[in-house]
Length: 296
Ligand code: NAD
Figure 1 (cartoon, rainbow, N blue to C red):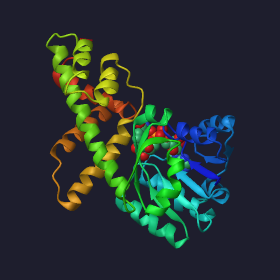
Figure 2 (cartoon, helix red, strand yellow):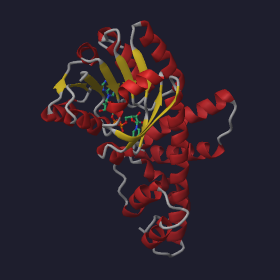
Figure 3 (cartoon, rainbow, N blue to C red):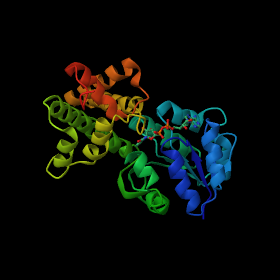
């Protein structure tokens, strides 16, 4: 069994790394926040002082970091992965970041004799905890086949989309659907509630029909119960929609409703909500309606 390194033990990375330890892999871990490293150590993982030390001890290095600059820093910054990586190793970036930067990172790693897969995920905190993530992979087919058994410890629907960066393109598409669905569910539940209907019953009825979705199930419940602790932070979804809008501008695709969803996230962020779960987008619409779901 190859030694695995895991960098970034946040809401997603911590449970994902936990599955790998439980599956029997020797796991070297690093995060700039010490508490999550201690939790992984208690499960049997080996803490490292920096990303370089992770790479020195591992044949496979997984990253699960917030944004493009964080991945660049962990790979190529001071005491980064590139300073410790051995030829023949594979870097797997499971963060959601820029497809263009991803292609550049893959080229730089190739010069060091290392392979790279981009493998962003969907399924949220629950998907990470239940090892039920959807994993969208970009990279060489033979590397994908080698790594697939490791992906299977963290996810269920694992698809090779194409070459480097294509996994990230798929994730950008995913985030458009998620944001616009949250927006639609916010409008629907808000309208129903202000019109005087029992919003819990409305959600229950909708879940049995054509409007059914995982987002209605999970985020609809959050909107009704007012549970906005993350989950998936608004500031991370803003980062993803920036990637969508920038890509749209670059290649000439108009994304009008993605832009609207981004403005609603901006409104909640401006009011101090950047760290809230993305289901809190509903708060921007509630202000426009001068009404809160449930009449509160
Ligand atoms: P998070 O903020 O909870 O965790 C990120 C972790 O990375 C933190 O523990 C932070 O300390 C660490 N970190 C940051 N920079 C570092 C560095 N240079 N070196 C080492 N550690 C560093 O974020 P998250 O919710 O776990 O999301 C991680 C990625 O997964 C993001 O790209 C996000 O868009 C994506 N994602 C999140 C969800 C979700 O529901 N939370 C779902 C799908 C995809």
